[in-house]
Image (cartoon, rainbow, N blue to C red; front, side):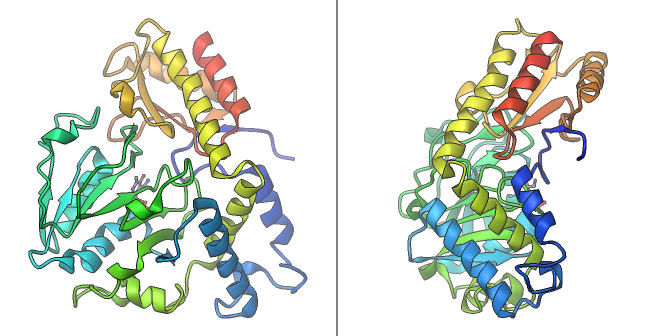
Length: 362
Ligand code: PMP
């Protein structure tokens, strides 16, 4: 039995103990077959069962409408920064797309899309990322092929508390860091994607949920492995998919289903994040979060200690104290420094309470 660590990593992130135990149990011999999932052909009937059941579970948990394809792809979240324009820029003749830029990840997505067509950043350039500019100030282009936003900015801790209204233009969301944390009306989106390594499993697989009628419009130069139609026609088995990562996602979804499902995760996320925000808000300015209150993320909570740019000594001391209590991965992202608590689904209420108690003490 390993010593317990309280793990608040931003991703790859904590997996539920039961998921790891199940993977351990099945590592050498999956289902009495005498081989590991790691060794299994992606075209074997046993793996086909795993991928099918992963899709079925995801469809159940997220209530995904029938006219959406679920794809299990490689290339990570950033692979989608290219795949989206390559597949969808040509939905309309102007080959342009609208991007709502509220943090590093949406900024990176917009920059990548510029390689393939015209990109219109709908909001004015922000000095720092601390909130979501009022949607009445966005300059949405009605002839854009799509509008793109990042639902939860993992580095800056900014999460949309509303779904942007894009009129008749299809909406695309990067849900990498808040996927499976709350119910989503999938029918409001053309496409949703998420890397698995936060709430949905381990690194290696990227989940894409895309409306069927948007397939088959890819630019000629789109690589086949990034082409949604090609991947959909082959049920994500056009080439070798990340088999083990898909298996881990399967275990995570099974775990979710048995632990309150998406509504359970939603409730828990509100509870856990409130514990930490309460400490910050009641610290008389000792802990400082610079994010506007209405778009505070429930998944990632960046903060500073002592001043808005952080007192280096105090922050170091905080991390050392946390480490003594075996509370790990609380450093802020290298772009912004400071501290960051990530509270993905597998982080328990108890672990969050322990962290809140330490923050109060400190
Ligand atoms: N989008 C968001 C919101 C992310 O948090 C990340 C990575 N943490 C990415 C995209 C990029 O994902 P990947 O590293 O899988 O390419």
